[in-house]
Amino acid sequence: MIAVATPGGLVDVIGQSVTAEEWFTVDQARIDAFADTTDDHQWIHVDPVRAAQGPFGATVAHGYLTLSLIPSLTDGLVEVGGTGLVVNYGLDKVRFLQPVTAGSRIRATSTVTSAEPTAQGVRATFTITLEIEGASKPALVAETVVLYFAA
Image (cartoon, rainbow, N blue to C red):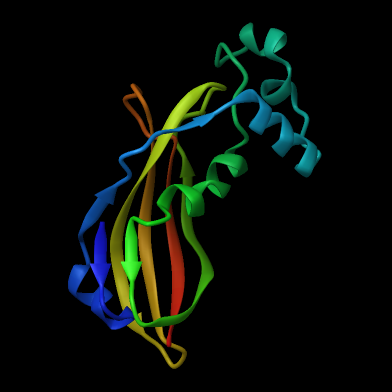
């Protein structure tokens, strides 16, 4: 874990990375639920029989499902004390590098990329890499931006 006492302390840990110890399984039930939530029922996501004959050999998680797991997968990797509020400020860059097939296990690595004081607090950028167990390439790499308000 990377831990700092205040949001301003993120400046001192720029370049540091931390990887989750636990793997998270992306199962077909989660993929189906995401398809229902987003009305994206493309066969590569929800039809295991047809998908087995497709380009990935199995159903795959939606890219946006994989992206949406970042907050959960990075929870506890970077602890910032002295905050009153933490807000998702957005994304600067996202690349989906490899599909996550149903049943795959993924985990996150978070790298502190930048930390800048602003009028509201500290805006920090993290490079998040979601690794697929046993795969040579990650599922995705995203630059997430978070705004930390002091307590």
